[in-house]
Length: 366
Image 1: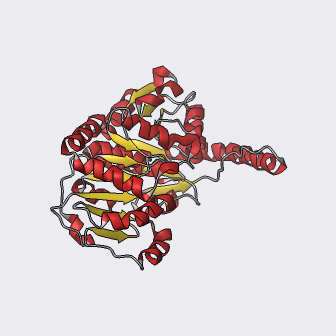
Image 2 (image 1 turned 60 degrees about the horizontal axis):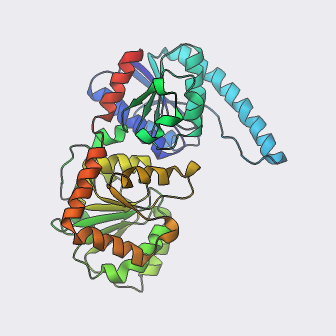
Image 3 (image 1 turned 180 degrees about the horizontal axis):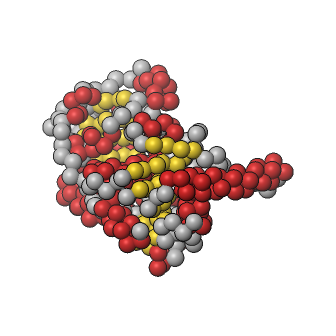
């Protein structure tokens, strides 16, 4: 099978695409794959590093502001889109894909639209419980829409929707504890919670952890705190005057985060689609602090999907404090039955064969 795939801008669009490619390679289904992204997006580094052929289109998003500057920007956006569609058609004619797949981001809009005009089979994947702008636009043109949350189904044509889950889930499903916590100076036989604010870190979560350190020092459970590289020096400066007991570990970043997930008893963090796919695939209780700065507040909607099934606790960022963080963790660890019930509910929501489901959909349209 010859596959063109596109997802850009954020890891939430890129990593599901890479997970799907990996699974297709494992099943020996790929004759060739071409990833289309942008020069400035994260994909321009991440994808080539995986040894995947990569080409770029120049494109940008619309500005909501309708002042003169916004209007000029939007005129340029339309021009770039039309030019990118033309370039994408040439790429498609040269590569001759059996299927073109989009996982979100503006660049996937040009490629998938071009493929639909050329009558090439198309599929888009929506990771979140609130549909992205590009996927809402593409839904009328593509053959199928794969979704990760049932709650997003009313935002797409019903006859095109297939519930598949997020391919990242299949990458981590079945992983077993491997005692990686010792690398951070933590015990491998103590209940451990990971606290992190996404790949770049989150100042509000960082501050809540710092404020909670005196209380966390006294707990029987361990905390592995990831500050994000850009915030690490500031966090270290604030912690310099404080005592950290050996049940606490502070690091700037963990390159292979999925590798340590099976060693955890709980996770505190944002509610991005990739994180939730991993959490539900492994059945890990979580305390979710959705970012209020994302489009359509989709992280809150993602988190609410888990909370509704008693699979997670939600703390709005505006209500997050060190005391609130400790209180929530104490509640979670003090009641093993409740913790186990939350883990079971999370795992019940997981779709550990997400990539295989998407491959089944592909086979129905090529």
